[in-house]
Amino acid sequence: MTRIRLALGLALAAAWTAPALADCGQDMQKLAQARNVEMQRVNDYAKAFKGKPMDPAGFCAKTAGLLQAENALIAYMTKNKDWCSFPDEAINNLKAGHVKNAGFNAKACQVAAQIKKMKEQAAKGEGAAGPRAQPLPAGPL
Image: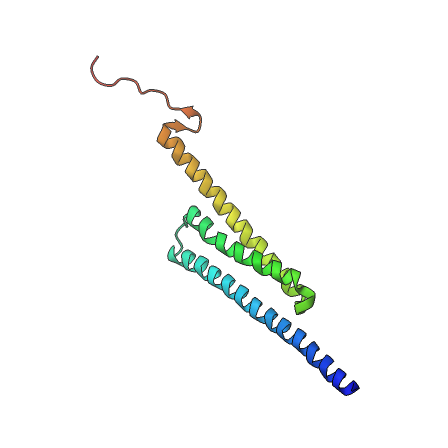
């Protein structure tokens, strides 16, 4: 009878742990794949400019998806650190990379906003100092 209980206990333990470990691997694979897809989009966008200055608004938009994918990956790894046995070093490296990517995104978005503001001011006929003065009449009086 005790052998049956022991076998049943081991079977239940295996049933609980095996899917959980498989879920860690499957979840991480999906999250990492989503991040890799977003990273490839950013890299392809950067390569398209071949050393020329990039469009800050486009870069801002392209990197937003990467930041979301990294946030999801970091959140999952942090939440399931003990359950899935994620090393602190892996989580810290991912966080450090995310901080760099977020910094690039913030700079690009800031420059894009400044360019947009300048274009709006130019369309309204305003310079950096305010409205432009009326030009003096030209030609014979």
